[in-house]
Length: 51
Length: 464
Image (cartoon, rainbow over all chains, first blue to last red; front, side, top):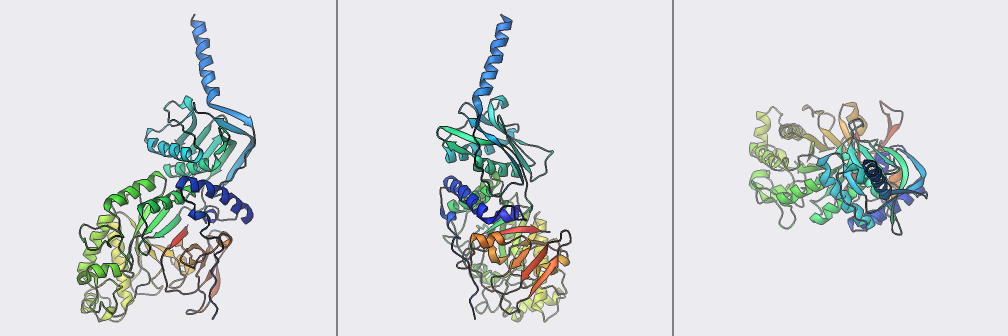
């Protein structure tokens, strides 16, 4: 989410962003010795319960 | 003879310069997050060998160089010496006063030169370099390029709720690593809430929740760990609501008369409480030296039975707060705590929580973290002159099932405030507001939620 705070106007398409993120996250996993962040949000999209 | 010595010296210098780096014809893929503002990528790659080193023109940057050295080794397997001779260095870091405070520049040609406007910007440049580094067989490569970068938002935050979900030092450090790597410059640690009090205290030793708190030494360690990585910790003591852990430990000090019916709120009608809170703030602020801010929570206070407390009644009378409206006491409390925070050299941060209307004026020097767009709408706060941090619940919170996938987050922008719950009360209202300095439009869905559960991880952007 820092992408959209650092660059408040969308700078690259989402598809390109997520490709970059996979690359940078893989390096972060090595640096932090932890890969949990890689999949934390994938597949989650909370929707408000219907009445 | 002298001529031969001179020629030999020149040859040695030339050999040492050419040994440390080589440019070869290979264009590298570059993937950097956040995306840099400007980058010119060339067709070649710089090859560094083990004879070269890392250096800085500033001796104070020694620990920083050691950090970069360690991170580069972890990431690439290549060990690089720290050298004092700039001519021996392939990578040079320096703080350049002619650049903006949060701006950095990386030039990679025959060597790597990093200039940054501040230490924090240098720390950000370091993570860009880590993202640029590529191991190719026995070689460590960097793409030949020039890169200029700076953020649009001065405040890029991550909140970790340690009170609802306590985390080990190791995990907190990993989150600092994550924040630093993606150029977050503030981590807000939500240390206290109903569930636990995770700070230490000498004056009030029963406050720290057994098995779920940090020592003073731990906090010092986190402060230095985060500072070295260009990240500033903002401590948060939540008050007057979300304070059951205070009351459980010292009901005789912090509780209201009907503490069993409302064990969540600090008694705002007792001088003893104000003194105790000041002592607690005084214990913590010297540790987090780097932070210009101190967060006092201030949201979702439950006022049940507060007005039935005789000390509250007496206090309100003595302070000309009337005798009917508990919100006036709440506003008075915020104003008073703001003065305490300022006394200890910090600027007060609070969650959205006070209403627009009220006799007691809430000082404009308090920074409001807008997270629900419920108690006050962001456009109203801005119109009234407050500085906001956008902590929009949707899509920035990661709380149990209330989290959103990367695409939804990517579609968000800094000017949008949205609650996860758009149902009434109050009714769903959409509005737009034109920013004074730009033509983009703020959209906000107004909703309500009383729930704050377990782990909150919230990135937020600065709005002033």
